Image 1: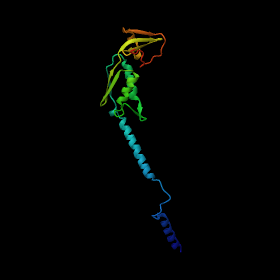
Image 2 (image 1 turned 60 degrees about the horizontal axis):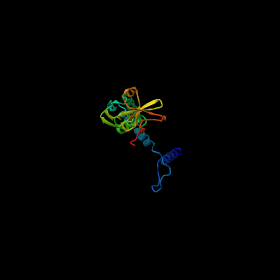
Image 3 (image 1 turned 30 degrees about the vertical axis):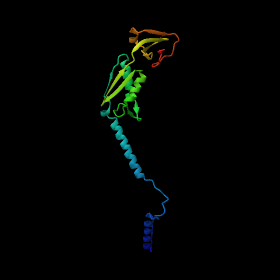
Length: 191
């Protein structure tokens, strides 16, 4: 009898292990496909790591920056602005010094607004960047309070005057009201 019970129990456990169900009724218990989720997640992580390694490689970095047309603006200040832009981060951990992540228009707007230049053209050729600058021409020195500023032909403040600007024979205007002055401010008008 014990032998018969063993076979009956063995067949019952075998039957209970099988997934017998009616095809017209859906199963109530749904299992998550953990193997697929882990496989796709691992593949995505590997893809992200490979892309970041490729984008941060030395072969895709910008090697040299050439600045043309600088006459009045201090070149060190321009180089500092350009280096700040190239070292800024994009996509959380990648730098803009990569050829694919470099945005010439953004650098152009940045230089034009920060340095108060007349026009800026940025051209990229492989791993080299060429920046052509047209500066505002100094026309007069504007003194307000204890500071002196350089203004261009249109009466727009270009920058704070340096020692070289003070030695030039530019006309000087002195403001009596101690007006707050900043780069890009239009002091003189045509009227």
